[in-house]
Image (cartoon, rainbow, N blue to C red; front, side):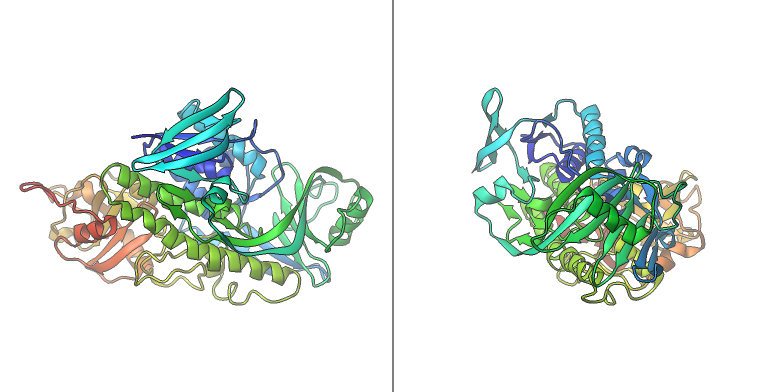
Length: 525
């Protein structure tokens, strides 16, 4: 197979490269700059992104350098009193990461690139500016400008992770729909002691809301970050003006040192197409989201969950090309009406222009799931209704993310559902293991497990494919009756919830991948 070409080595491009390595696909990553970006950008990584980093084996490195946050707080500027609180600890049964983390993007990117270099040395090619590309029947040929002159590269696919001013999107002449608002934000990183010299009890992620002036205060691993709007046409403030602004929000402090600043525009713009043959748009090349509630970078990481496994299934011959169409069909509504509109509601709320009742209503669990992107439901088929908002911990529906629940495997050791789902579909049969139900043997791309509160006897022949669900806790969490089949995709999302019937899992799997993978005569399904 020709390598998959990735253009752009920001967080989405780097994570995509790690994903392709995880799935065993050859790839090359190209970046036009001489170094990775050192600009002050996104600073909060949500739980769903951490789950992605876990799958691609980089979560431990990221967590070691990050600040974990389990309380996201709103504060009224006039009274300095809390207005709302998001407690991610309520998600402890659903994920192994019941928190979000604060880590600046320019600290995240080296972690991802270092991990990539260890796994595939030389895969990242700096100083490669894309000049043009041409599709062929079996791939894409791209031309790059390098310090050593033009370089032509042949690949199987081209993944555009080259940002909001995407060269790939521009050369394909794909329109961008939406708005670039006449709104600017200023982001400032400060050396400031709010722990000992000037102790404050603000959450590590604090939203100061006010109709006249609002600010977001973020505790980064080694500094504090302030984010606030600039008045239309206003110049960035001087040091003294900024110091006065800081003191209006948090009171007197003994000293503060500005480390870095950046001013950027607010966008809500979505590409009208995300796929053109063998070329795909990802991250900011596909969607520019208002940077509120950390929905910019983290929405881009959702793309790295959705597309790579599809490419792997097609490359392995396990799926038809039509499987790739599901990437844009499922992810684009989330960017347009999900992350995009949610971020806009949050932006207006901070400025006193509206409320977040439709998003922040319901149980504490629902609010936490929504804010961490664990509440994403994909439109996986015509019957599944996509959503990004959870109000309560109700029964799972088709398209929902399967909780990363802890069960006990046939080897006696605890296991997590997401570990079982890595790189395959998983069919879960909720039935009585004592009755020795007949389930198919595992096959490449599709595994089968009996889930029961009754441990499978050693003479049942089911031990290796059994999961002990103590107290039927997972069964109750899903909200399905006994004798139910739940099919989970490699991206952790539920593909089907149906009564158990012989051969049904394989039928469902074949319908999704668009290919007949029936076993040969004499082989198990």
